[in-house]
Length: 169
Image (cartoon, helix red, strand yellow):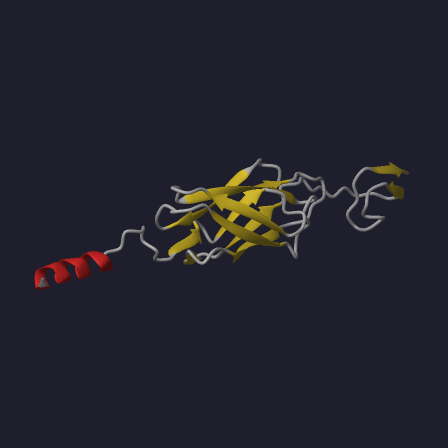
């Protein structure tokens, strides 16, 4: 009877469910750069072990020095400054894409920060909860000496930077 009780107690305490320890998520890099107009770039969000269930993450977009739709776009759509990505059950990583937009304005470096803001209780933040993307401007800028009037038909409205100008002397 004592042996039966010991075997029953040992068996009852054994875990029959998968490991419920919270998995850590992280971006595979904390910062990176991309050239304007260079094409789509994928960014990875990974877990330290494969997920036991689908995991959904909400990613916030902070682009205080850039403009969504003018300098870059994301897939999934980040127009509202947030988007969701799903890491499927059995996987240990998922991706979203950023696409820098080539424009003809010389603007220097622009920055976008992606930060995971919402996730399930089955996961916890790891080392890199956010990713900073630097978008490099590769526009050709030339300065030509000019004496005369010009009409600026761009959105810059006769500022020092002009595009699509008609010059007359």
